[in-house]
Image (cartoon, rainbow, N blue to C red):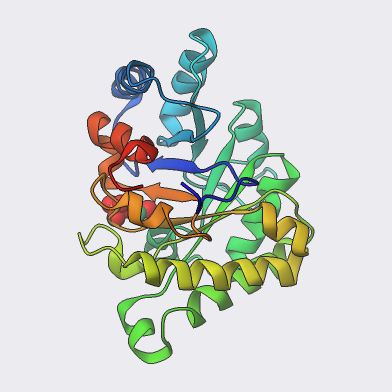
Length: 265
Ligand code: PEP
């Protein structure tokens, strides 16, 4: 599979959103690990991460550590603040204490329902970096944005602002998630994803330098399934996927992570 850049280990990330409590999470993670091991998955060749709700994280951490499961995990959000009177928020230092590998920042649902601006996304990115938790910065255009400005303008502007606010960084992941593709069953085409991911890599280069840009993983997200993942992973600037709905089905998520085995890849 020539298109996958050897500098960047592909990442298949499952965003559970507000699904599965901590008991269901334990059962799910056990099944996922068995399913991948059964398929002889090369965990160093394609990393697999789950993003459960906050209340599940301690259970997932304990299970992964106790059973030495080769899975990664992270949170779905983080506070921009260090500590204090911010009811309901969770600090980056708390995620660090749970050994979270990643945190998703600026998902379109956070932007839509919680008013997160690019500046807030940048401040949250800084909070993650400060606590050695790798941020997965989500950007993407709505259907209206696409019609008015074309595919790249909005995600490029979102990422540019977020990185400017976040400051110096060497370890970030970017997720290009067109809002119109999330949960709609209508994924972008691999060519559309490649065009925007290439533009986003140029933004990383502009903000953080060519070396960081070459090492930064840029994921595509939006109605990814086992039947379309291979097309995305053939693109030179797509380094993995952020998967919502399909990440809640062990068989389907395993098959997405096993994209290298798909026919025609
Ligand atoms: C998401 O919510 O990040 C997502 C990509 O969802 P879905 O895969 O269900 O479109």
